[in-house]
Amino acid sequence: MTQLISYDLRKGKTPSDLTRDERDIRRALMPFDVRYERWEANAPLAPGAGQDAVLAAYRKDVDRLMKIGGYQSCDVVRMNPEHPDRDAMRQKFLSEHTHDDDEVRFFVEGAGAFYLRNDDTVLKVVCEQGDLLSVPKHTRHWFDMGARPLFAAIRLFTTPEGWVATFTGDKIADTVPKYES
Image 1: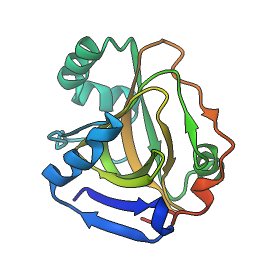
Image 2: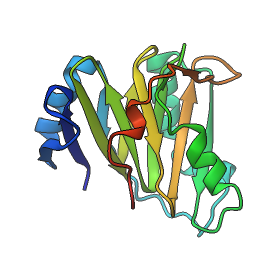
Image 3: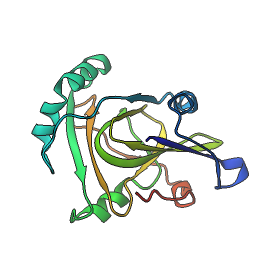
């Protein structure tokens, strides 16, 4: 079940609130303009299914979202505890950054944590199978898949090249508890 943990930066880095209620999660994400939806993610996929199989299984939903959001391309990112690049991939987006494009992910397997930041708050949104999260461009955030990652997510982009991270240089991500699946 999706989990949201709130950290009030004015009171330190200890969690100030935790919820699994979808309405409360949506309400907490409103100030960040983050889109959060629960989709059915029960398409039958073979273990380790590749990008083509995952996209084919969710083609109708992906096409609908691409049309609504003006997205031009999509791909699938899949990580597991045995992936040879898991440590490097984890480190890549573990620092606070922004994008010039929305960051859209639909989790079809497993889980990972998005951290969203404004001036006073960090929200840790633990996304799981069936969660769609769209982080608007220029939103300060980071993503943690944990030390033993296990997830597959469809990503959508408004440009064919995808998005590039612009790191803020702020060390806030080093001070908030990491995600451990």
